[in-house]
Image (cartoon, rainbow, N blue to C red; front, side, top):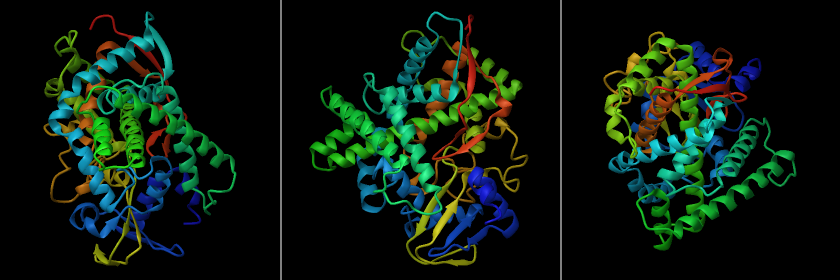
Length: 439
């Protein structure tokens, strides 16, 4: 471990994959004070996330550190609180309601194209930052009940600054007390003050509007009925912003990188998109997804190669036997979608971008039983509540933008991976965006 500390910090999934290849599917790390286990066999992954999920909780360094930003929202909460808030929010992610959000996704994309290009035919931008801006617009339109009234830029800046600090904090070999006035702690406090003020404004604005079925209105209703506290509503709104826009933005950014590096795939997506009906003034509805099987396969394959949640951790709450080994209570268990989904044992030519793997069904390996070789959204009861929205949103965004624009990362072959809270391009992604004249 000491010899590989550089690899652990630069490319942690590569370190995990290296450990699994050398020591097998169950690895115990010799760390003081607590046991840390790495599980890389798909059967063992399913046992932890689904088969025996009640024996594992979320009180790990990963989620406790993330909670410095999100509080006890669904992403970081556990046990009774998680179950209560999941019941409150689940109606906002019902499949029929997600389907009705498609037109809002298309409208947000069209508005974004107008802002980015205006009357110009082309421009250069940071594609990573641009996708963050666009997906935040979509979160506002679909989950928060309306536009962010000029708060989008400061929300993105505050969220990304806060997440940068907590990632650095999680990587510290020794914990630094919160009370110490370090530059990172000062930056985190400032970012959280900006974020809290913006979220308060978003909640107040939505409360003054018309009742609806959006998730924020469900949270406000729960607050009024005594089913949630003001702090719990705040934490869920921050979680919606963090998890709802950064993860999809990362998937979109990597999709453009992959398409730029694979011209034949890009041409096939362009052909599929060009055959879509004219969206007219009302935009596309979710029915258009049935006419985008290849674009959906591109997204699914992107999620295999670049899962935003590249690592999942759990803490064992009781003794368990995994892979023939006894895992004691209090152990930290590490699962890596990135490592498992790039394992040649489960995925032939695992490092190659082959969307055809997913033609015929999205996420064919994400089934109710059998080995779990594909889990970009987790699995079991803690399966990401926004999965259906993400799998609708990402192909819709690619189709809408590809119909209007040519998106070309300037250096797709030189993009480095940044393993923070999510897997994103390191240092942004310069790109050229050109308007298509005949779509």
